[in-house]
Every structure is written in C-alpha cells, then in structure tokens.
Image (tube, rainbow, N blue to C red; front, top):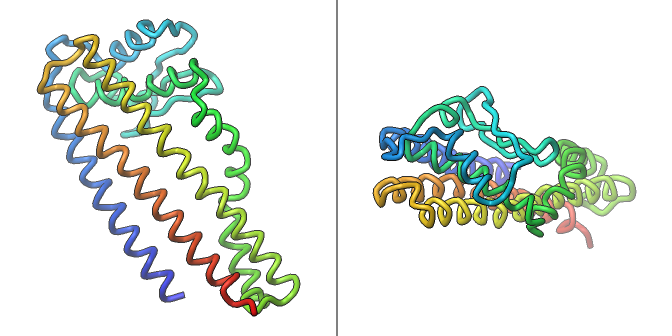
Length: 231
C-alpha cells in the first residue's frame, strides 16, 4: 500500500501543478481584452451559427472553470466569468465548448464512444477500488476463490474508467483544435489574442492528460496486486 500512496501522491502533485498553472494562465489572458468587444456568450453563439447549429442554447452556469457542453439537452454551459467577459480566455473557453457542440452535430466518433461509456462509468467508477480492496482482504492476492473474483471485477471496473479517460483526450484536443481554427479563420481574434487563447487551451488539455496518466497508473498498480499474486 505504501507504493500506491507514493504513486497517488506524485500524481496529485503533478495534477496540482498543472491545475495551478492553468488558473494562472486564465488569470493572465483574462486581462487581454478582445478588440472585437464580444463576450464569451456572443463568441459561442456566433461559432454555433457559423457551423449551422441553431438547436443549441448558450447559457450561464455558476462557478469558475465549470464550463461544459451537455449533449443531452444541447446546451453550451459557460461559467459566469466566461459568459460575460470579453477577453482572450473567455473566447478560448467559449469556442472550445462550442467545439464539442460541433462534434455532436457532426457525429464525431470519439465523442460518441465517450458518451456511450458515461452510463457504465457512472456506476462502476465509485465501486472499483472498494471491490479490489475487499477482494484482496478476502484472499484475492493469493488467487483464492471468491476474493479473487471480487478483486478482478474491481480491476475490470477500473479499466472502464481508465478507458474513458483516454477516450476523453482526443475529444478534448479536437474541440480545442476546432475552436482555434475557427477563431483564426474567421479573424475573431488578433495575433496576440490568438496566442493567449492557444496557450490557455493547451494547459486545459494537459489537465485531462494528467488525469488519464493517473488513471492508467492506478489501474496497473492494482492489476499487479490482484493478478501478480497468482501462481
């Protein structure tokens, strides 16, 4: 267990560093005001219209960095700051979330795969570690009967969550690429504003990369504990 705690501690430290850097970047680019004077909400509405999407609503949601696209009710949810502000950070986030709406409208395969896993992961992710630990306590590490099967089920459940994390990567990177291409091609931002938007989205994507690496590391650790102990 000590090795696991060291692993989790290291991943948590990297995650904190990336998250902290992301917040600093957004604070920095929030000071870069858009020359076109458009708010995040206006940026989002224009990007949707330019892609012929008229059945998606842009709404404001409480909190900071709580921005997301909801495919169930077709809403682009922008945090209050992004929704109202008129800067490079707001433009980047608004366009990124609209990138997910464009993916949805165009039936982007990776987004479809991720959406199909949501119901499974929502059930299995919270149970996986408890099943593994419970199975190991029951003798799973030695390959003993019920304990091993319980632990193996936990590893399988954790595998779904890890798969979800890795499928999320191309979804997020593609949404950012769509956002940046649109901002540039439609001359929505100046060269300086574009550089800020690109840098902010780059660090946002890294949070998903760290999460995926952390999920894989945890999966491998527990898989070794369960399957490595069998004769």
